[in-house]
Length: 444
Image 1 (cartoon, helix red, strand yellow):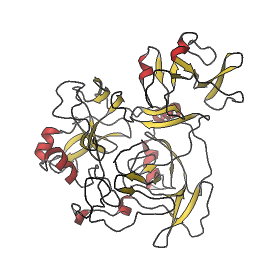
Image 2 (cartoon, one colour):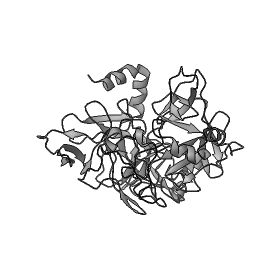
Image 3 (cartoon, helix red, strand yellow):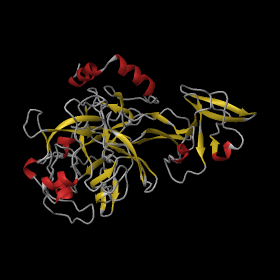
Image 4 (cartoon, one colour):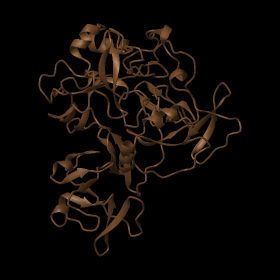
């Protein structure tokens, strides 16, 4: 039994098992090579993992203004050489600028160990084997080479990357992979900050009505002018958590977990939550988000709704990836802090604490989920330290990364710091923890 498996087993309680059974997303099993299996993650639903429980990631190619980053299918690009200069992929930076803290900089494979295969390994379904430049063989999924993350410590962790969509001039992030969700044709599942959201295959939100039952819809007549039933084809049959309701002779509607499904005619963009403004209606989640800290609050902002601390101040997430050829992250406390200090305080740690203070945790507070934790940080360096360190402060972290408030926010619901940094904060900067963003229309 591996170290990761032992850690996972010691954390399981009767209560957590019962909760997991009621909230874990269902999936379609597909053939896997020996040693691979599926783990349940809080943020990305079911994910593939190696024999030690480590989540598997790909680094798919992403178009930037100055070229492509990431890996093209069948071609590993993550090796043990340490990058020393910028690649010039992300405008406006030129190529050839020396990267910071080279003496401590990790290589790509230090953070992203490749998932190696035996020379005798054979392809299985969507799984194949590709050759690395050093002659080693590496597993691939849909031809994309596979890696694990040095940040992941327990089975089901997805601390290395995310399947949330990104765009613009943001870096090529690593993406956890998993089996297909168990949904009928015409549906999809998206990872968002409010949970794993059920959508149509065109990305429009799916809704449920509290007064409906699996057999009798309460939304009829005039109601269906605003909320349109999602029609099931004549050959559709009940399976697992899915069933079919016959609304009228020959008209059949999809039902998920006992509630008929609808779209909202006034939704203006993908993944909308506007339909949930109507009393009795809510978005459909295949898996809820992990529990937030008890004393966090939800605040209405001009542009939507945000997560906030106990005082109502908006929570911000820091995101960063450098412009090296391997585009390593720089948002984790074990990463270089040069970029963050430059962005939040012109290189001055004291100014950073003034403008972007950490969200402090009390001595007794503990995280209630895998995604939200309390860690010890030296605020002058931004690095993780032991709890006994005299400089240590206890701070809240999301995905093992500290979260912040903004000194320029004066009232609950203010989001004056949202998008601070480069490319609206997506490349190197801070973004509000949006539970709902109606104004900018960004992916949650």
